[in-house]
Length: 422
Image 1: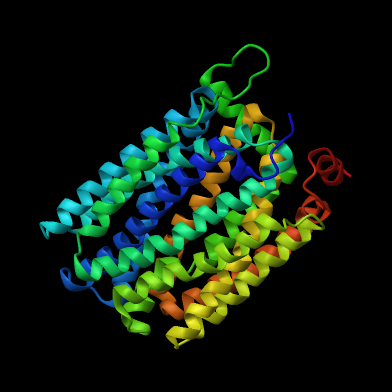
Image 2: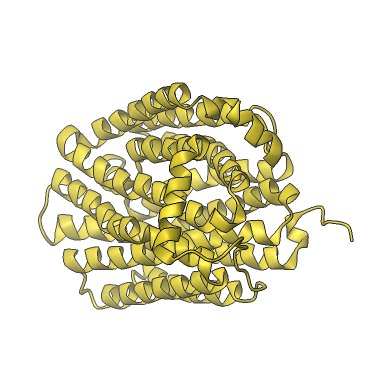
């Protein structure tokens, strides 16, 4: 039996792709509006200044990160011990409940800061279980030779949904403020049902099963000892932690560029549009040479574009820069995701994916906290410039301290392990 020429020829992968698209569409719409509503409540209901409300956005990121930090080892273990479909479906159901509460509270005009922080924490709890289980499914339903292409197509689902979710959510919110959250709830429910139609998936284990705590510790030790994995994961963690400007987009939308919630939706969608365009290209022509060096250059370019965005006072120019940021970030994400999945044994993929997901979430949520704190001190523009410059410095340091990253030349699993170990 000949192997399929494309992941989309595999029925399980098509269902997986659609479930991923719907879940990301829903959560991106929900998260963007959650930030905008918090900023609006802080400014209008609590009478906070721009700096004070910006700091609240940073605390919102922290509220999402705390459950991610505490539960990541448990989520990775769950993805390696149980049916990954069930873990993903259950987590999407929990996130759907968060969306329902948001819809009802928005309709009743009953939102306040404590409620918004509680819902953000509940959202973070749900997402920590989705990431490892969904990431670990793809390598089990496509042949290894098609995995880089499958990751690129999966990124298209992610990035396309990241374009459509905030844009549609912002436009609908401007007309009926509770409706975007209701739509998110429905899509999360459908995503959970759809992922259950994929064939049952459990990780392959060799030898007698270890105790749960021992398994969690084993996953952490494995990443710590494998310098290549540690370098890949921490590069994304520290670069995006510093250069993440998304937390301050409500500030730019309302008080710098004066474009309101509709403009915020387009600004949040712009990076995903650039990323989706690059992902589409990579799904047909995956990178296959000097991938480590290209990943480092992409992270440095992301930092430089972040600085350019900080100084833009044109809405159109800001959208172009944000799209370019998404494009170079997609190159980095595509390479890093492929390298991590191909380098990791299947019985550890859930735990390694959880650790990688924690790094991504830390870079996003803690990055929001860092941005909010920096904005309170330096102003929104100064905070974004500081972050972009920091990302460039991190790239230079990692290129020096982790030469394994520069030595990674291809996605062929056996060749990759030889390249990074020389």
